[in-house]
Length: 497
Image 1 (cartoon, rainbow, N blue to C red):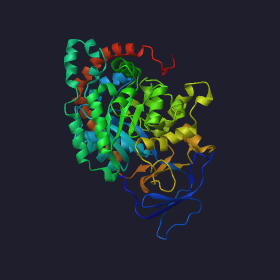
Image 2: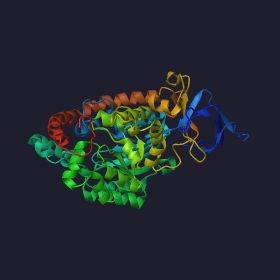
Image 3: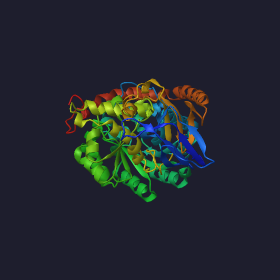
Image 4: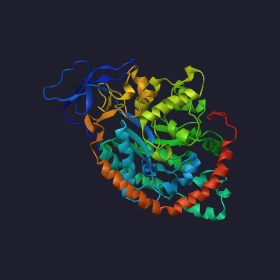
């Protein structure tokens, strides 16, 4: 669990990352009961304070992953040349056949990788089929607790199948496939299942908070979306959904609603300070202004946007229009790894290729802030993402002897453009070491590897039929969906537009 270290701790000898400075400067950090109480040179500490020598190390706040999928841990490396729609068609195969232990294993893979790569908190949209279950969500929460991370855990839900959600797709399948995919409709009683999970949630005291994730707007009926919005409001829960991730989605949204997906969400009472739109590749300026006006946030996932061919989100424009943006990795099934340094670098590079005019590029300071304070906003935290008095002592220590820091010119620039997680030496969460000398202290990674390999072999054998169905259906998905994406749309999200 994200358990704070009791007592006083003085961290000395390190360099402190500050986006306002070109190069990090020496500073001490005084931590009391897991909270930073003072930052500065040559700090005094209580006589009984523990000491931590950070000499030769660069300190920065733990990265916060604004969007991932813990159920994707066991699906890593399963596909290539997959659009989002092909990935959704493959979901029942990639994520099928799992028992409760498998669900915990999958989330544990993600949490362990994140912590070892300098990420201390995450917003996880965790999927189960046909309904979210108390046991499954409890298993995912236990994974984060065992690793020692903070998390917002959101059951990912809908009341329509992928094949029902895309107009004309079901009819494009042969009758034999139509009969087979008919069994992929989410179960009834999803809102009741969510209410039961919320009623019995036992993890808030361990900093694993519950949220809601109606997966994609048009995969949900208006009644279902409004029900999720009402539940989130009544229970004080955050809510995240995939919005305008692919061009297929926005074209379908216009066909179904006669307005943008975000406007439809707003009509259902979804958009507000508790709301995060994941991806948002195809939002227009009016959508972005609505997000800013209502205090909603965006989770920018550049890695999966490129991996799935969804296009290039207009990060600089989002920031210009006043939207708070966080950065995410997306899940291992759609973006391969959980490396927030790579996500920052991808965000920076994608911003640059959108325009030849440097004034339209996101700066390294903006990227760094998005991955820390911006992502903290997506999970509803004002006590994370910064190393200053009053913030929780979630601290990453990078080894400045590593080649990424030779020479060390411009700290934040090198964090965004150079660092790749190989310099991560130690990680603290709440002043408690969870990674020391590049080794995870909370779980046995070798044991995890053995358990995961055994699960992989068993699940490969158990999902043969699901894989065959996905393979057959993908032919028709690929024939149908690109035609939707080829239709004109006013937002330019592709290079060839």
